[in-house]
Length: 467
Ligand SMILES: *[C@@H]1O[C@H](CO)[C@@H](O)[C@H](O)[C@H]1NC(C)=O
Ligand SMILES: *[C@@H]1O[C@H](CO)[C@@H](O)[C@H](O)[C@H]1NC(C)=O
Ligand SMILES: *[C@@H]1O[C@H](CO)[C@@H](O)[C@H](O)[C@H]1NC(C)=O
Ligand SMILES: *[C@@H]1O[C@H](CO)[C@@H](O)[C@H](O)[C@H]1NC(C)=O
Ligand SMILES: *[C@@H]1O[C@H](CO)[C@@H](O)[C@H](O)[C@H]1NC(C)=O
Ligand SMILES: *[C@@H]1O[C@H](CO)[C@@H](O)[C@H](O)[C@H]1NC(C)=O
Image (tube, rainbow, N blue to C red):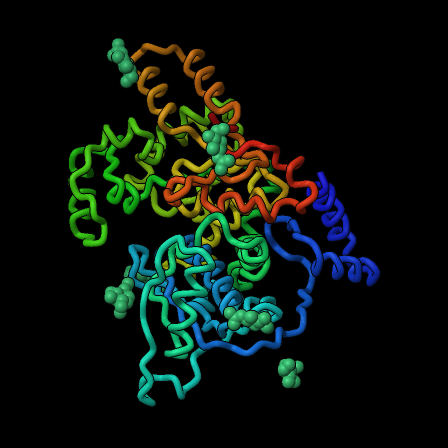
C-alpha cells in the first residue's frame, strides 16, 4: 500500500505547507513520485524542471474534436505523441462546432501557461506556428486524421517521415488516436502526467469550482450523480424511456438533423434492455434508494440541462430533497460568464465530481470514464459503476409487481457488491480497442510503482473482478 501511505503523507505535508523544509521535501516528491491531490488541485506554487534540449522534427498542430473530456484525453495523447516524435506542439485547438458549440479556446478553459511550463522538460509547446510556415508565405501543411488506436510504431514509422517532409502536420481529429495498451511505460506515464498535473483549468474556473466544492463539503458528505439524461445523449442513443410521444419525436428529429450520427432508426426498448441507455432520473432515484442512500443524502447533479426539466426530476427530488446543482448553489452572477460556454460549465461539474465523496455515473461516456480515472488516481475515492443491463431488468420487475421493494433493493445491492472501483488492471481485448477498458478510466501503470504493482493491483483484470 505504498501509494496510499504516500498520499496520506503528502496530504499531511500540504496541511502544514508553510515551513520551507516541508516545501523542499514536497519539491523532491513533486519531481520523483506520482502525486495525489485533494480535489485534484495543486496547493503549492508549481516548480518546473528546466526545458528539455532537443532538435525538433517539426510542428504538430491539432484540432481536438468532441466535448470537454474527450478533448482532455486527446490533449494528453497529443503531448505524448509530440514527445515521442521530438516535435514542437502547438497549443491544441478546441472543437467549436460539436453539439455543444462552445466558442472557448484552450486558454479560456485551461491554464495555458501552466500547461506549457510544466511540460517543458518533455516537449516544447508554442502558441502558434511560426509565420514562415503559414499559408501566406506559400507553405502548405499536411492535414490528416491519424489512424485510431495506433501504437508508437505507427507514429514513428508512418507519421514521422511525413513530418520530416512537410515540417508542419495538422491532425484534424484527435479522439482515441493512441492505443490503450501495449505502449512503452514512459509514454503511459506521460499521459498521466499531462492529465493529472499539466492540465489545470483557468484560475477563474478553479476558484469557482473550489467554492462549489467547499459549499457542498460544509453541509457534509455528498454524492455526485452524473445524470446523463440530456437531450443530445437521448437523441444520439435513441433512448426515449420516460419521454412523452412528442418528446420522442423531437429527439428523433434531432438525430436526423445531425449528419455525423450514423444510426437513425433505433428501438429504445431494445437499447435499454441491453444496458445501453442512460438511466432516467426516476430509475436513478430507485437505484440510489436501493443502494441505501437515504433522504438526507446530499446529491449534486453533475450534468447540463436535464431533458424534460424540473418535471422529469420530480421523483428524484421527492426521494432526495437535498438535491443541488451548480445553478442552485451559485448566484446567477457567478455563473453568468460561464453560462454560454458548455465546456466551462462541464469543467465545474468535472471538478465537483472528482472531489465528491461518492461518484455515480448513470452512463459510461467520456466524462464518467475520465472522472473514474481521476478518482482512482486520487487514492481511489469511492466510485460506483452501475450495471445498467441488470438494473433495468430489476426496475421493470419491481414496477410490474414481480419484485417487492425489499427484493428489488436486495437485488440491486447484490448486483453492485463488487462494482465499487478497486485497484485492478485494465482488461485488454486484442483488436477490439473500443470494447476494452479505456486507458483514462484506469491508468493502472500510474497508480503503483513497478515492484508493488502485482500486490497492489492483484492478478485480476477489471472484467474478471466485475463478473
Ligand atoms: C542544446 O544541445 C546542443 C547539442 O548538444 C548544444 O549545442 C546546445 O548548446 C544546447 N543548448 C542549450 C540551451 O543548452
Ligand atoms: C529524439 O531526441 C532524442 C535526443 O534528445 C534522440 O535520442 C531520439 O532518437 C529522438 N527521437 C526521434 C524520433 O527523433
Ligand atoms: C481532415 O483532413 C482530411 C484530409 O485533408 C479530410 O479529408 C477530412 O475531411 C478532414 N476531417 C476533418 C474532420 O476536418
Ligand atoms: C447567452 O446566450 C443567450 C442566447 O444565445 C443570450 O440571450 C445571452 O445574453 C447570453 N448570455 C451571456 C452572458 O452572454
Ligand atoms: C415483469 O417484467 C419482467 C421484466 O421486464 C418480465 O420478465 C415479466 O414477465 C413481467 N411480469 C409481469 C407479471 O408482467
Ligand atoms: C481478463 O480476465 C478474463 C477473465 O478472467 C480473461 O478471460 C481475460 O483473458 C483477461 N484479460 C487480460 C488481458 O488479462
